[in-house]
Image (cartoon, rainbow, N blue to C red; front, side, top):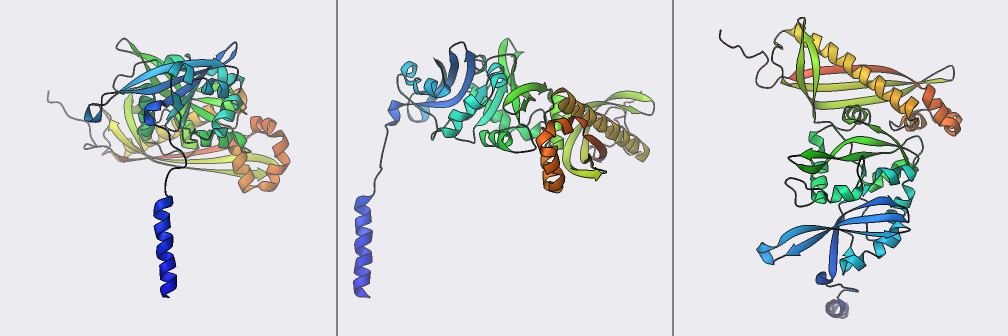
Length: 381
């Protein structure tokens, strides 16, 4: 027993003298990449990076974003040559966002994903975006009003995304997973530049629709809202809808409180139909003239919401099935999971079946709160 105890103590003592780093790099010799993007070029790829330049020490340290770009035939080549304009080694593990320009996305995402998924120093949790109407370089050189840099601004937008319903976030692993999976197509949130107080500010809204790895079209913010509901994304945003109450039509602002969607295939005589049931619990944020103490008013409003959401779902399904022929909802995955035998008979020609796929839509909207008041504010004559 004593001999065993001595052996254990000796091993512990040796462990103290054998600890250390197998490798190290001085922080002063690194340039931290916090955001990146790719644009198309005649010679190949333009890699644009937003780097963190720090000044001062201790509590007086300040961060200043610096945008650098390099050109090469491949993304890997551009990444390795980044040290030339930077003057130091680029450090990639802290990269938060990655932008892909519309031109690159229409040519195919594999040239971008190949490097990202193979590189040991790039995280698959980076937020991935596609730009619309602008280049990645223009976005990274824009001026957010409050954030220290564009990457920080976009990351904050994603974190606050559950307060809005204008986009569906996608990280690298999610996007690449959809590209590799059967019965589903991929999407990416869209970054656009808008004018705010004289400056161009990046805004995230809408979705880019992909067929395989190529961008084929767009969803606007309202269409993306419906897309998020059908995907089961928890919504917390607001929306405004013209609503008729007692013969008068006026806008009412609603808030998503809770949403549940159920999609099931129905097989009849070899034909496939999708049954979509969407349940929405909503709040009323602003309604000047509607008295929700009157149950008849509440029922009338709920019926209008049911019809409006059913119509918007049909419009979205027509767009993605007929216009883009891209299964971004994942109907194929639902069929594969629920009816594997039927899926196997449809899988080889799913694009053709997708165009003809019919859907039965059922929407149940419930208004569960009206703020601090359920009746309109009365103004004395």
